[in-house]
Structures are given as structure tokens and as C-alpha cells.
Length: 282
Ligand code: SAM
Image 1 (cartoon, rainbow, N blue to C red):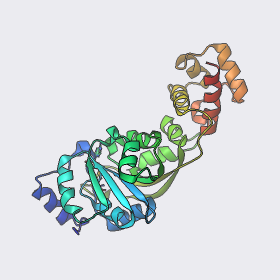
Image 2 (image 1 turned 90 degrees about the horizontal axis):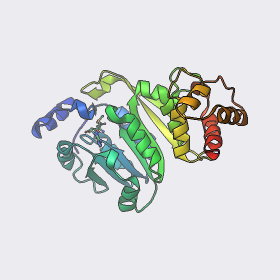
Image 3 (image 1 turned 30 degrees about the vertical axis):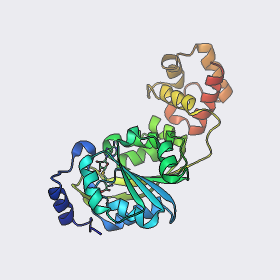
Image 4 (image 1 turned 90 degrees about the vertical axis):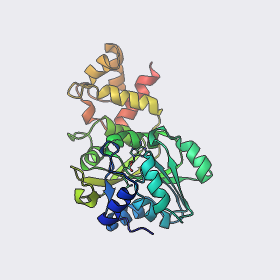
């Protein structure tokens, strides 16, 4: 098995396949064995299925393959897929799909590759599509056991923020619909080749019992109420949700939320409560 932690091996592989790390695809390869093993351990329990987003040269894929029953890795870059046929050679439980993850149908993948069994999702996510990847997995309504992701440290801080924090925003509340986010550990930029301009963190999202309101309603209300962050709920309800004054007053009274609150002060439970009331009265 290739020693993919070594900068020498990484540059030899890239040279052999005439590749250079593509910034536009967020290609920063992990080169720290300890971090790779920690991610694999957090992501997959022995015997579970795993879906990896963006395997790159395959360093994390190899570690996942040692723990998982089966690994399916989705990679957009054809050059990387060629490298993977070398670095994953002999790993019978591992399959690479050459595909844009954002266009992948997770239910279909689960059916075809995991026989509809539940699976863990894991990825050292490309920075340019972090939020899209998070929402694509969480919204897929596929049997996801947990989602372990390497994201920029600042994104982790936003996802972990609570009501009232400056970092609390629409993405925090949207992800909270599906599960609780835990920060597992931070990862220095020096653990990657090439080193990115920012530090990272590994987060884990555990699905939770869903709120008693459809996702579309919840997300629409969250986005509407955060549309103008500095404005009050009343303002956003009027301008972005196009509600009438009377409807606004009734909804806030029923939800027992003060009219001059701002979205940043509401908990995910408050959003769910408001979404249910507003959408019921539509
Ligand atoms: N997992 C490897 C590691 O940890 O060293 C590589 C991680 S690198 C940060 C992100 C990987 O995601 C790259 O291999 C990149 O080509 C791939 N990628 C970028 N956009 C993608 C997309 N839309 N769908 C699938 N893979 C993508």
C-alpha cells in the first residue's frame, strides 16, 4: 500500500499522472497520519458502510477501507480517479465513482452500493462547496448514520454557534434542523499539502428526531427571517416573507416570541415553532 502521508510520495504520484493540485477544486491533501486515523475512527464504526466525498489521492479512503464494510468514494476529478486506481488497488471493499458529488443521488447510491443499508458520510470537504455538501447530505433523506466533515475552522464556529452569538446564522439554523453539530478537533493548515490559507476543524453531525414541521417550510422561514440580519423579526416577516401586520402579530403572539427580537436570538426550536404557525395560516 502506498505511503500517502509522505510529501515525496504525494509529489511523485502527481508527477507520474501529470497533475498539479487544483485550487479551484479545493485540492489540499492530508499528509498527517494521526489526523487521518482520527477522522476515520470518528467517522466509521467497524463494519459500517461509508461514503466519502472527495477522496483525492486516497489517503483517508485507505484508512476508511480498513474499518468499513464497504467504502464508496465520489471524486469529481478524472485525474484523481486515475491515481486512485493505483492507490486503492487491492482494496476489494472500496469503489470510486467519478462524479460531481453535488449531482449525486444519495438514495440511489445507498440502494445500489449498500443494499439500502445505512451508511456513514465522511469528507475532507472541498472548501468552495462546504455548505452545499453539508446540505446535500442532510437534505437527501438517505439513511445517513452520521456525517463527519473537515471544514474551515470559521465554518465550524458558525455551525457550532448558539442563538445570540455573532456567528449564528441561517446555515447554523438550517443544519440544526437535521442534527446536532459537535466539534471534534482542530487541524492545523500545516497538516495539508499544499497548505491552505486557513486552519480547519473536524465536525460531526448526528441526525436527530426531526422537528414537527416540513423541511421546506422550516428552511424558507429561517432564510426569510435572516434575510436582513440587523432588522427585527417583524421587519423580515413583512419584507421578505410578505406577511401582513395582523398575521405577523398573531404568529408572534402564538409562538410567544417578542416582536422586536431578531432571528439571531431565536433557537432552532423557535424557528420550527414559527414555521409551523406561519405555514399553517398560509
Ligand atoms: N480526501 C483527500 C485528502 O484528505 O487528502 C482530498 C481532500 S481535498 C480537500 C477535496 C477533494 O474533493 C479533492 O480531491 C477534489 O478533487 C474533490 N472534489 C472537489 N469538488 C468535488 C465535487 N463537486 N464532487 C466530488 N469531489 C470533489
